[in-house]
Length: 327
Image 1 (tube, one colour):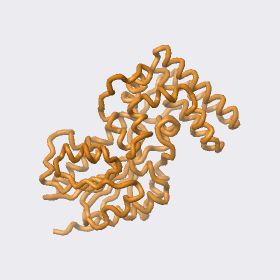
Image 2 (tube, helix red, strand yellow):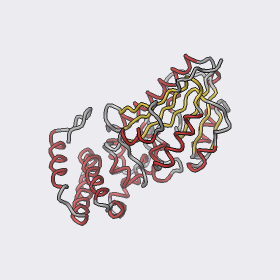
Image 3 (tube, helix red, strand yellow):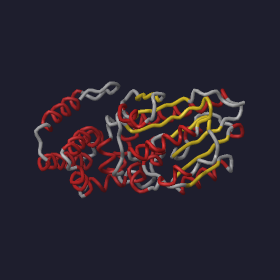
Image 4 (cartoon, one colour):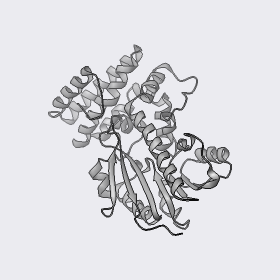
């Protein structure tokens, strides 16, 4: 299967193309049988020390099976099969996956590993191989591009406003602030984060230079309404954790929180993301992968623009408030 911006090997491309053709005739039972074979093969390869090919099976072929499981309405059975397989333990030993499934902040917090986090000492060899290939994948590259894009928008608002007000939603450890010198004394920076451990990390690192709000996903909408308007609001991947109804409601609130000339940047894992199957089956259930039209449909009005990253892993919804800023 060829996608723009990807450069899979000919062998993998041919395999996935053939798999896609075969999947069109599958029933739920035969699809689950195929999934079992993919998981068996990947686990065997890990045992043999072939992490690259083991990861390729989990990355792309498992995603094709995931897509068809959704269409055949047997995703819960596929998830049960994956989580009862011996490879599940290897995946849970991998730090990115274990953070995504166990931490309150879920997927967004675990991005810290894809942004260059060190693998914990004592990580078992099979999990270490998954970690090595995961952090070198195009998905990890998309995450690092997300960090770079976010920093660019932060720098942009700093040049346009003397003391800009910025709101970060579910941005984890704020690694975007580490890409070069950053003077927080010239910015009013508010962070809304679900994970208490991350809030403690930010509080210790930035020593009251940030306003930190520890709130659950259900409390997001009421946590900043009385805090005035913002020149930049960004939510790296929080919307991937939200239903359409909740995401649409939060977008409406965020739009109203923008100052004149302000910008809202929302990221969402794409429906074409290479790791969509792996993330759903091993990391966190209930993730909402959205294509660009689906992301656009969440927005109320024509002023939102939608873009995709070069690897088709993350889509962006961007709004600029055209009203003039107040002096």
